[in-house]
Image (tube, rainbow, N blue to C red):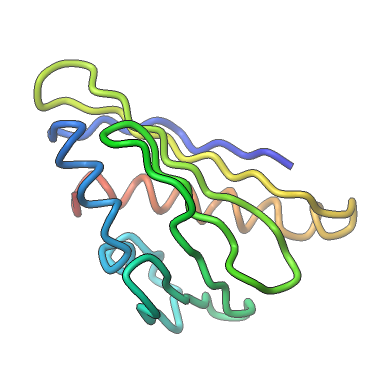
Length: 131
């Protein structure tokens, strides 16, 4: 299953955006309002839970300076990745898009598609004010 967020344009350089997203503590400020738990577990790992959903642990798996950050599931039954693509369009203007990729059975995919789409859309929308 692959889902994409809308692109957002930030008034920041690609380097500033990359540095913000590289620090997992900053993801707390991007989370939706219905977050029930957020905990930094390590320099590159955090746990979060949305109301009515199980806890999810994300770990930074890959980082390409100023252009891409990959967060992946750290344990648990679900294997997926959340990829932030960062593109500097002009000095101090950057586009960011989130891609969610995971392998799920048809039933699971049907259940999580809506909530995950809304989740990644909220993350990029909140970047406009938080980054």
